Amino acid sequence: MPLAADTTATIIPCLRYRNAQVAIDWLCNAFGFERHAVYADGDTVHHAQLTFGNGMIMLGSVTDAGGEWAGQILQPADIGMKQTQSPCVIVADADAHYARAKAAGADIVVDIADQDYGGRGYSCRDLEGHLWWFGSYDPWKDSAS
Image (cartoon, rainbow, N blue to C red):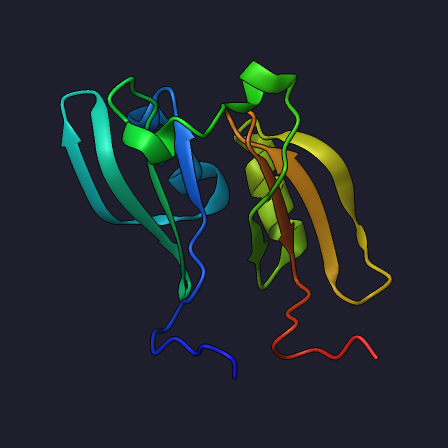
């Protein structure tokens, strides 16, 4: 029996940034996120929630006091810019989003292109090297068959 969540968004990626205050501004400017909540003490962001449509990411500052969970996370720069996961964000206009991200200095990893499974998308790294995918393919609306 599947476990169903009674929420709008059931999966929320969590990221950590060395300079979370700057990252929040950059993510809003480059990718179009909006501040939902930011709990900070000076330069340290204890917890932030940024929304994009009905999706959300949570983020915080890299600190030595991050606890057991935070101690399991390395930053991209610490591991040769490799990733084991990447947020995928559905956008209405992939070309416009690509232009906005590129203008803000996003490092384009996979150039924008039509995808075999539908939609159009691209991959980039943010200002601290986290890998992202942005595309117009919406698996909730489109069928890959």
